[in-house]
Image (tube, rainbow, N blue to C red; front, side, top):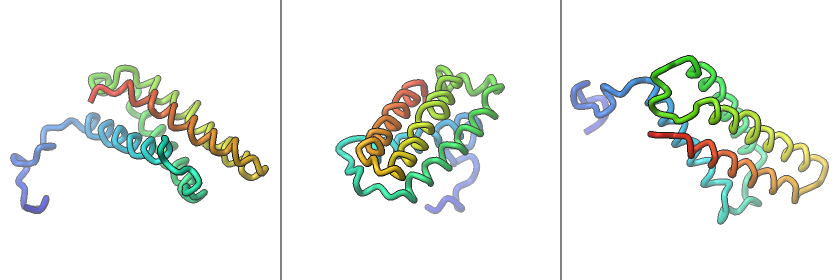
Length: 131
């Protein structure tokens, strides 16, 4: 059955609060990103275009988390929303920016290290999710 044929009462997400939907989407995005960056991933196959896309995606996520910070309902789905935001903004994103700078300077090893560190910080952020 296609989604267009499902009535609101049959839709499993019908009563799902928007905060939960947004946080679940972010959790799944973070899981996907970690799976690309974390060993046994082949970091050599990751294109610069993908890293730039990650930066844009994580920046958008931070903006949405900023919006959720004052939402009391969001606290039911994430242990510490501020910590998630901090791990993404202050650590994971910084690692990606520095990694790209290091690659521009010819330090490939530091670039790979930055990608790995980014995945570690994103895993720490994922530990805060309750959904």
